Image (cartoon, rainbow, N blue to C red; front, side, top):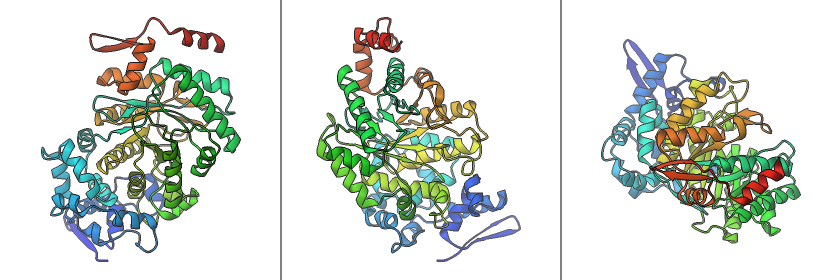
Length: 464
């Protein structure tokens, strides 16, 4: 591998490899400092960004950050690259790609056609030389639409995952949170539970409970219990009603091994989910979660900066045609994203890179209690992602997940974003909200309905 040099003033900066150039060009974040990869000062960072801007995109096809022979994610990226789609921009540098993305030729249709021709490393590289407004502007051009029982990702729509977690998986507590969320118009992306225990029997019981609620109230949504993919396969083999197959994923083979998975295991889960044919509108049925710092936390980053590792995870997601992908942006902790500023930047990077690669991105706009962040930071990121066209966010009672012990977005936050930005739920779910009387629409604005359906009144009385 060759070196890359750039002069700033009287200073000559040299970067010994492509992975070092990418790492030094990254906006400052605690995880890269922890890994010893970050730029030593702002001058070095600017020099790396300028050198990166001048780099031809073809360089990423000639050099693998992690050797092809050592990493199945590298092999996936290279073997599935669409040279025909790439041809339209093959003459550009990273800086030239930024200019093209910001220009009028980068339309919704042209960006959709380009996605298979971009590698994750190209997406990560261009994001590193973009301002916040650049990330928002380009991302809002892109729409990645998926379907199961509802349609996600349409322009003018913002969906939510209703997350009714409970520290003991107690059915009444979960049901109360579900009912509360539905009454605030949450849950069109899915009703998804992080289980307190990963026993197969408990997972099956939760899946059966969610299916019963969806069937009883005829809700056009999908359920998910966020268990390991192999447990989902066991549940499917038992005949349990399972909609979405979940798995946490990362951007290197070694990091995924830490999750107990590889591409073959994910393929087995994908095929098991397809065999049920539970989607009424489509069969996008995988649900993936990612997060900057996951590869570093497993000591499986191969010297690659955390944001580029994160973007490589989207190649894994893209391969399985997912219904939803969620960057849990501040969940891993301040060791990787120290404060609100770093969390905001990372969330916008993840959304931009995922959408650019053709992935249906959502975001858990969140932070841990020991991070230098607060709800004002989350409001800022929520608003920016709403403008940028995020597919979905989280909806949790009071923003406080009492099982996972972290802070995220509430049922009310979704109302704020929808009302402020003029966004609506998924069309099938919106029709259900109006049909049940939960929402009414007058003068083009959605309001809470005055009359709840009898079944909901009965459920409220039982939970009181």
